[in-house]
Length: 122
Image (cartoon, rainbow, N blue to C red; front, side, top):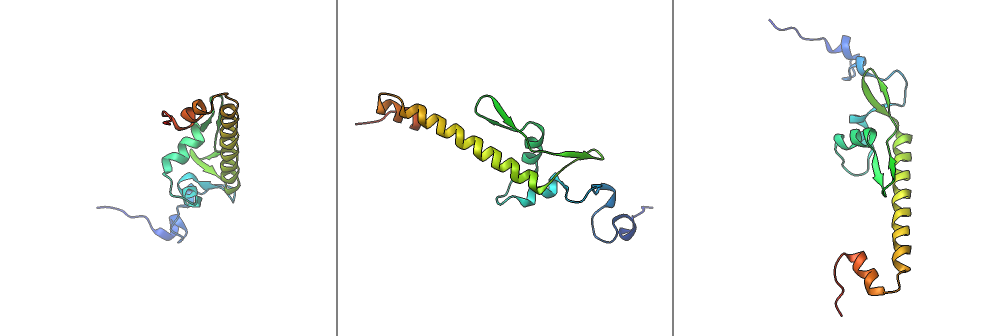
């Protein structure tokens, strides 16, 4: 004989289990925060960004800010926005630094080879 849980007692009739709800409003579990992105991303990407971050350049690592409640990771909408802004700014800075280095080269063809990763034909 199998037993079933009553939906109204465990979830409050909302379909979400109250046992896993964060104690503070505004926090979202990572699996729900995935839905806030304008493009489709995997749940594993959110977890990876929270754990190991995104490497920008060779020295800087940017992590998604999270908090743990009951052994589960939660984040906030403003933390996601901050993470995206930091990654974009750092990426733009790295790209601008690389362009400036290439423009300083005396040989323009050499710069084009480095930018395109292939030989320039004349």
